[in-house]
Length: 248
Image 1 (cartoon, rainbow, N blue to C red):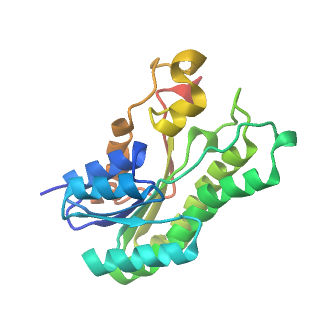
Image 2: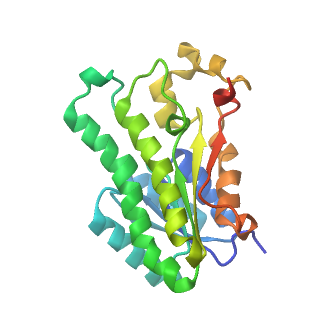
Image 3: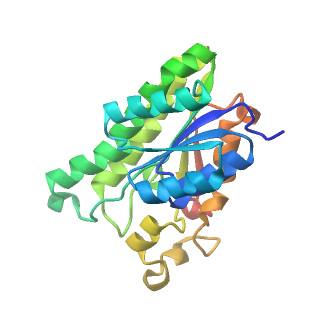
């Protein structure tokens, strides 16, 4: 029996990168998974490849109505939801604070911060009805320390906010056996991150003690652990997985 047998999970941003890796790991461990993304073609193809234990729903995480539709579709197919992985996120334009366009700031926060809030709010009724659940919010090392060399106040602010919101939900709902944890990856080989950092040409890997970017599937075991009953006494914590980058 898989480590996630009996779990019904929503994973956002699941069409590629870390979300795709998490989806594959969850299905392999026995979970039923609702994959969501704005990339309908890739998301639908992944769900088809994963088989009957996966359902794809096109979804803008910044839309409350979109979240309601995801929960309704997931519950109709698999039953009440007891795991949420808020993985969707964007980096946005890299600019110093004085130069950030207001529209860019608002857009980054809408996806990275408001989307996480809406997701937690949407699944809490299911988790309360079930008597428990696990929320895993994917933040970043930019939610632990300031960005150096790639200034982006909107991204850093939104990722710090995810860390704080996670703790607040853990405190509010711990008595209901609902756990909430944040995961803080460093540089990971995803299309979004490699495009933003130019891993080979920019020398970003030289700042990592392990000397390389992570593969997306190196983050998934931590997410599986936090979603599983193995982490039944783990809540309200930030879990850094960055190859030692923030140890420097």
